[in-house]
Image (cartoon, rainbow, N blue to C red):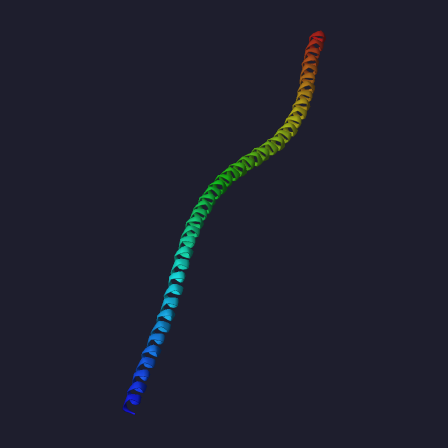
Length: 154
């Protein structure tokens, strides 16, 4: 009975060892699987990080290109605004010159009217002066005739 108890005890210990060994192996395989998963995850993460870094570099390059293009567009816009301002000034100058020309035409018309009036006045005055001169000549002639008549009467 003692041997049987010892054999049972030995069997129990061996079973316990086997269970513990199996449990350890199972634990190791779980830890190994977890480690492998972790390693896979790290490898994937590293590959993903490299891809992200490359994408980041590409995006930064595209952003730089876009910013440079925006600067070029702003320069073009500024130049176009300057050209537009110059054209506006030219148009304003033309309008002023046109306005001056119109005023000059109006003044020329007024001057022509005044000249016509002055010419008419002068003709009128010349006609009057001629009439006055005729009358003076006639008066002189009458005076001479009167003197002649007075001489003859004496």
